[in-house]
Image (cartoon, rainbow, N blue to C red; front, side, top):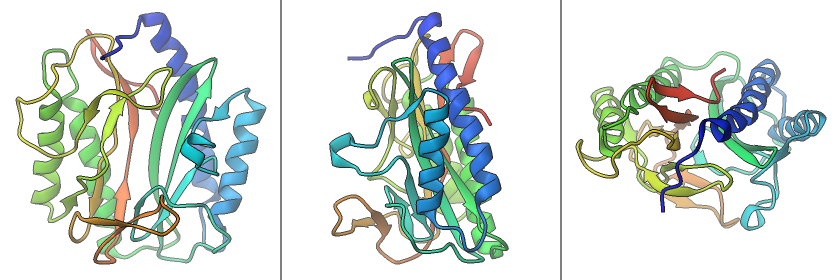
Length: 248
């Protein structure tokens, strides 16, 4: 069932999104060689608590942290750890913020110190793919138009699009219908309507799109060990076009 949101409900989600966006701005200042992703996770816990918000994924199906921290070949759902980030790494910090009963979801990939041209290309293309997808999130288009815009651009830039993980609608619950794949043909899938709130969150890889899951049951890695990046926003479908609720 697709749950359309009222303007008042979207405004509440926007408040959660504002907190999340500010948190990412602060995280960007923390990312440097020597910092651990566990330190970042602990910062996020404190930051949200000070603003009356909570990390929605902590405890979700037993997930133990406030953030997902995915380094280099980890696609998503990486556990924060004591391992210091190194110069040249990339790391994706993903979180879902709950405020006044409503949710916002955003992931951002960060370079650590000086990264290679290949890594920077991965970051740049993944971010642009997100915004190309958002451009298609207008009333009357279909989910497949978002998917196709992302896949066609990514593959033209010699990157692959992860199939195993997709975007989704969101509201009072983290995962609502419909799902939002980042690959596939245009003119397919659910037609977009005013009041829908969805995440678009492409994960692009330098090598194959295939993944494997670590023994922790959460951490998803590329099967070939090549690097992956992800950028994600939560956005509302409105009569005036897509409105990003987690804009930094």
